[in-house]
Image (tube, rainbow, N blue to C red; front, side, top):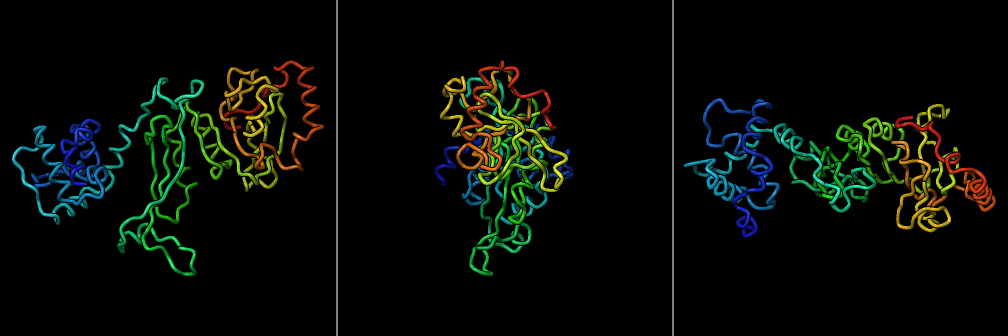
Length: 351
């Protein structure tokens, strides 16, 4: 690890992404600017905390030594010596987490271009939401703040406290655009529900099956973004209408809407069905997920992808894709213009 740190001792990456002037403004805005000259000024502590994350698990003093060498080489420190380890602890406590949170959000902007592989699909910037957990140091403070998950053995708990994170990333560059952290008792869905603030028009947000729900769907579509989300295999979705290209208009309801009086209409496709029948439906092979040819692009917020029962179809009780029904729809598609069979104007961004 020391060799790796030595190779990047200049820390040009940190000072390029987080310019000293930007760091000073953030520190002042958060009320952390020092009123007297300190051995560890707030600007240096910010760079030190960033370097700890970048060069983990290198020891405190080793990271500080290389950090100082790099900053002094850029004329940012002058004559300065490394303080004791206890001074570094106290300096981190004085700084707190708020300046780091603000500093992260300031340059967290999409960087992918049309030429970046995986960054765009049909003019929409591809973003994704997901979550993860990791261990933190086994200390009473961390246990109180984050908690310990169970280990599946009765009342026993994990050896380490866990931190849970949900993030919004740019698919093509893997750049983290927004993130929320909490203890292990806070679910991913709760954290992801705070991320629509960083989405907007011209973006398509991808998500896995556990995030599908009416409140979450409306939160993201309310930002102006398009969505492409998977559906749980055991989820039964009422079919409002089958379209000529093999996709469906579906309704999803909040679990609190027992009367089904406030549905959200979405556009559903079965992945396996779309993958194996591109020619029959007049869709170009390899151009999935399918969009209805009668529209230049589907209504925003009405793209829903999923396994739909595990094999690209709905449950039998509400499945319009049985042989007889599918044959009737194929015959109907030959008799009627495509425009008549396309999605109606009804489904809106947050309908």
